[in-house]
Amino acid sequence: MLPRRVKIREMGYSFAMTIETFNPATGELTAVYPAYREPEVERALAKAAEEAPAWASRSIAERADLLSLAAGILEDRKVQYAELMALEMGKPVREGRAEAEKSAWVCRYYADEAESLLRAREIETDASKSFVAFEPVGPVLAVMPWNFPFWQVFRFAAPNLMAGNVGLLKHASNVPGCAVAIEEIFVEAGFPEGAFQTLLVGSRAVAGLIEDPRVSAVTLTGSTPAGRAVAAKAGECLKKTVLELGGSDPYVVLSDADLDIAVEACVAGRLLNTGQSCIAAKRWIVSADRREEFERRAIEALRSKVVGDPLSEETDVGPMARADLRDELHQQVLASIERGARCLLGGELPDGEGAFYPVTVLTDVAPGMPAYEDELFGPVAAILPVADDEEAIRVANDTGFGLGAAVFTRDVERGTEIARRRLDAGSCFVNAFVRSDPRLPFGGIKESGYGRELGSFGIYEFVNIKTVWVA
Image (cartoon, rainbow, N blue to C red; front, side, top):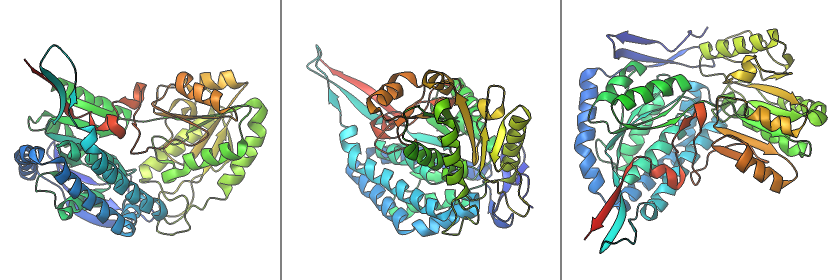
């Protein structure tokens, strides 16, 4: 059986001796990494501080050339990286290859666009000349999650390296191999020593890293409690943060929705990465007159999905990343059923090894149930039946989260208006499932965090937006 959690043997308050990884499909030990102790962390911080001004002085064209080389490595080795993701956190290899390709895309996007995005902007004032410049701030600490172990890192690294910052990565402790591989990509691409470094430390080391004066800013993708802790420490140190936190995205199926489109998007959006995504389609809110047909079609589509070995090309849904996360999800399902939800599919722990959980559908989900109130991080869909379209929009917004949302309707103009003005989320999609795109800003509101990654807005989060006024 899988261990209850990734084993990190803590020595002292902040540092572990080793980090062990386990294949979530089998429970087998796959690798043991020596964790960084204080001397290794100190050397990394010193390197980052030393390299920061030199990297900032390089031309944008030089930075772009190196980032383009990193993109090429990602594309050339996508099969290797997909297998690594499958072994460390259970991602099906087809999705792992796509993740490596998308990571290359974000590198190429910023390599191509950074020069225009970072160009100084002249502003007419009483001065003989006045302009706004975008200058790097120095070392940026990234605290990253396991669910998209390459993409989450590169969407932070690409804009920040192009902006002239250097990166320090504290990755999730169950994907150290991915963390090491990412640093190796930058080294092989020719980035100077200290421009991007992986710190193999546990979560207890994060507070000390934030406090270190050589760290200029912090970005975190993770849970809402983790975001609160990082924000509190960074606020105490007066350091800028960007937080991309949890989500419970509503997918609103209006009375006039095309159910072919709606069902396909809901299923794809719920099962991507075995449902372990902040922007997964977690709550399906369906108007009463379409409910019966929607449930029938959705269950039919979900039954066809193959749950199995993430290394198999046939697999649609792999194991969850850890057994403790699988068990927590199951308790949320059971509690929802005890409080009145009906289980239409799945809902039972399977026999055998691995952290597998069946594709599950709950209906009649209502307030007071975990499936309504909380984030279900796994392959469980919650159907929230509503009387009409107006109630659907109200229920969609009845959550503390605000990361993504989608609305399905044949009236595209009406859907666009609902997405723009009536759904409370950072990203709202019409007739499609929510996803991130290097060209568009991404982030949330409410308990889903603040700040933006990607697009033009993402590159400005960790720069000094400097006014220059010349008499």
